[in-house]
Amino acid sequence: MSIDLLERGITYIRWSLLIISADAVILTLLLLLSLLITPMAAYIFTVVVSYFLLISTVIPYVLVVLFWLLGFRDLSHYSRKYFMGFIGSAVTTISYFINIAYMGYLTANELAGNVLVPKPIMLEPLILMYNRYFIVFSLYLPLPLFISLILGILGSILSMVTLYRLGSDFNITRIKVGALITIIGVLSIEAPLIGGILIDVGTALLTFDLGRVLDALGK
View 1 (cartoon, one colour):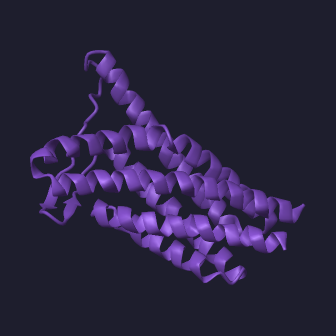
View 2: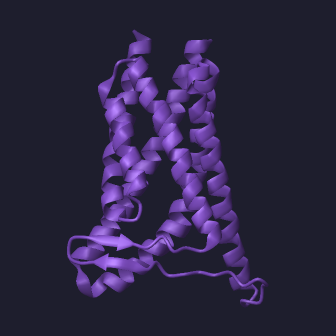
């Protein structure tokens, strides 16, 4: 039964990582496009903001949060040493619902003709640095989104530390490397192009090499 919990938990986590990786690839490509095609930069930035706040955080992430929570729940049931990952997934879930609530409030305010009190603050990202090769965004965000961001970062780090421990337990170095790269990518969110690339690489490594744990269990 314990092995079944481990296998099921890893499968859930791999599905979640696959969605995260695909999402990060799309966001990174949008940012690259905004750097390479200067006349379209303003339009691309608008798309990036809309994508990140609405599509990226609402539609696919309902599956990410569900699989992430179920996956780490099963890992923690398999062994209490992985309970930190479940805490991280719970924090990430709270972050997600704060984001959803704020997006819902913005939508309701728009439908009501901007009459809600207090009026929601929706700020454009403040670009601190922009050239052909590099973008740095300010983290000056509305308070609900800032809280959601901080909780998301904290939850992601706790989950990645747990996956690092899993890699150590099964002596799979690339799981540990993938977890570390993903942590660095999450902490580099202010420079989203760099952070996105690192998250792409880290989650891809984790998705592939967590499969090696399943192979080892099968043998």
